[in-house]
Picture 1 (cartoon, rainbow, N blue to C red):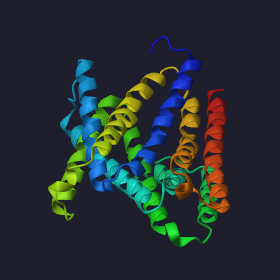
Picture 2 (picture 1 turned 180 degrees about the vertical axis):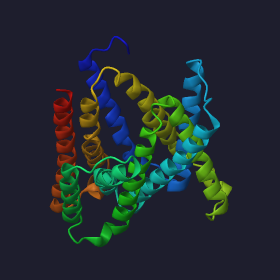
Picture 3 (picture 1 turned 90 degrees about the vertical axis):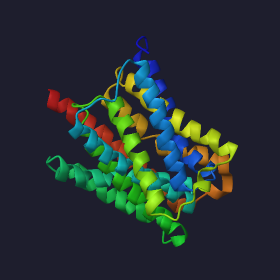
Length: 297
């Protein structure tokens, strides 16, 4: 990885984003329910990351205060994934992925509240565009309304844990943060299944196809993607990373259309709304890049 040029690092980053885009597709392919799916994903991801940390002669050792706080963030991550995969189950991959574009809207509201920064006019305009785009995407078609509700709620929680993570990146190594979050999320889902859900242990028995998909989801699309992305980011600017990640919905929708065909096909209004959301988020990244250059000067 150290010999990677910026060009190959960028290509690698896009391959990672394709892997991230596969999560939605795998969510539809996996037949088990969302709760068991997330339970296995977090368990597998945690085990893979622990092996990685041991290989690096590292440990999960952090201060007790940070450990408890990161475990709490892991509960938010688990809730985010539960809602995201439930959105896929009750609608389709395209709806769930497009809803994640509303993260920029929630970020413009939550960041000033949580990290006490000023509100930018650009973000207010972006938020309005995203709201309008969601309205266009739905186009008064309420057949997928549950999918939109779950998806937007998932975007809210996804934004929340991303902001909380930003508070820890200078205090705890990123791989430790993710490992502890996976552990926290796994424990959270375990408690939820045992006490707040009509759960039977037979639900943990999944088909061999699901076993393969879950290993790909937890091991490759979560743990591997994270570890490689951390290495690649050493060679790329934040702007390159942001712009690559912004293409995740495009890859997800394309893969879903190729693999699932008609069940993923949406009306024209949906795709207009999707393009507006993806375009708005991409424009936001570009404008942030210009602002950063001005501040450096």
